[in-house]
Length: 368
Image (tube, rainbow, N blue to C red; front, side, top):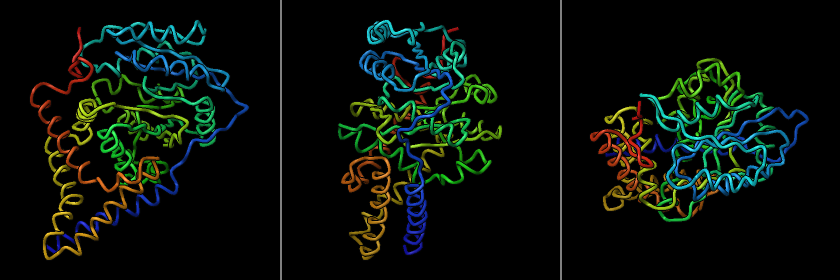
């Protein structure tokens, strides 16, 4: 048992050190202006987003940055997404609505939509962002300033996540737990190794030449993990990759209830781990480091269990601080792990029955 305790302590100790360093050095968006204002294309793939697209378009058209166009691709929505976006645009000439195009075999819907958007974009900088992101007026200027300051070929912003229901609060912040706890940011920014690449598809800003050099979304057309794969391709091509925290300038509410949280995470988690076997191993691993210590409280090793519990809670608290989430939710980490186990089972069930489902589609299948 002491070997197990030592192993868990070592793992948590390494993760804590990495999280502390990342929390201190993670770049933050902040309002800034630049004399250089290249044309920016903001590109939004949207499928059945009528509930949020109006607010998103309104906020984006209120940006203080002076030189941009906004393209929204309505990917065969059935809820009037185009009409809502047009109404929000109020005839602003910077807004263009594209109709969904039939996909060819081998594409996922989002990748195909992003590919079509890139072909219609005129900007020197291409920003792919989701329909449920919320951009404050200074956000675009801050993003372009950050990109220019670091001469980034790809800048990916981690929006501040808006979490309201318990399902959101307990699961969504685990994205940042993975980034802050597992990813050494220094290696992401400065090493040439694709292993350390990461990105968030909610906001990815590319220099057009860099996007074309990696092959754009066509190079990852069949993947639901396109953001990470594109970041890896950027590394492989020797391009400059930067990550940045949205610091309430760019926000996102990904989901609104438990079914959407479960299915939204389940559609990506298997691709993230690479195989069903790896997902099972990862689930067992997280049980070992975050759940088993609580069980030790009822054994002669209770003191060690308490120490390991404190380390796990502190790790979750650090990620809450760095991502502007509720600190008290760190105490509920075991429940978060159990919910992620349910999500893993959903992903495995889908894997055995044809593939993940999202917004009425089996992801990866398309009409010819």
